[in-house]
Length: 341
Image 1 (tube, rainbow, N blue to C red):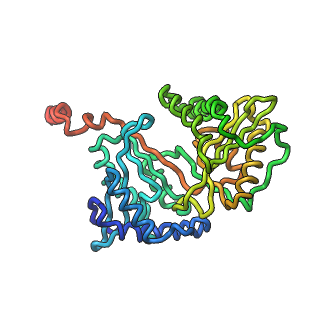
Image 2 (cartoon, rainbow, N blue to C red; image 1 turned 180 degrees about the horizontal axis):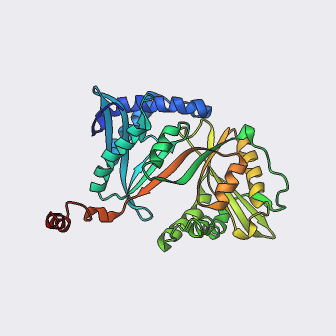
Image 3 (cartoon, rainbow, N blue to C red; image 1 turned 45 degrees about the vertical axis):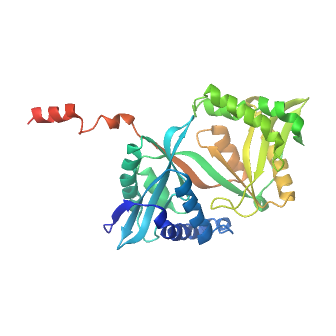
């Protein structure tokens, strides 16, 4: 691989970054044609990068060949209750020129990860495209693992399930606030159990519950509730999305969905999917996007059966924070090394 110059990247590099990203997405659209949408143009992508640099703390690195940008990685420094202090590399946050090998991604990460650690970020989250094996291979070889799958279903290709539940499916209304609040623990309880083992922080669980209660107030949101004998069995929530690099034109997002464990394999989820697909198609949507935790056995089995095809992975790497002091700059290690001479 040709030796590149690596240097920090910023808002002054937006035009070159946009060109690389458009080239990456044109390659993606050869595998996923629906990604060649109205959003895919230089202005939209340049505006996205400018806002990201202006509104967030962004730390990135670029690889330059004869002063031409041939690859970059940028990440936002984020802090929240669930992930703590971490770096978030969005779907737009990594791209290399078509003629560059996956090794360039590994070298870019080697440079930028040091800068992230200096910011106290030991958890690195990265959304990568799947139309080109290069990105996935590079991150696997950097000890990243798959955490979340992002998928798209073309409604024209949807095949309704047979042998579904006899549960009733209805549209929720503003009187269903408490019912949605009761069902707010369904997804989190799945994530909390084996083999996901996601911690259920009390304050986060309460925050999610309040969010579920409020969702019935959102005018454009479509909420389906499955029930039988006056008891809720599960739900689906659909929200319209504006076009972006991961969402085709005229797409709707299946943002949250779940059924009680006792209803699994009863056909409730299948009936919800049949009704949800029919309703959103009648409203003029062409595609449904959703995402799921790969270690959630129920989700990672059911959603592909519905016809959702993975287009991106969220991959994660956790670095042992002991590296801050357990390194060869530590005086104790230096003294040990001198004593052995």
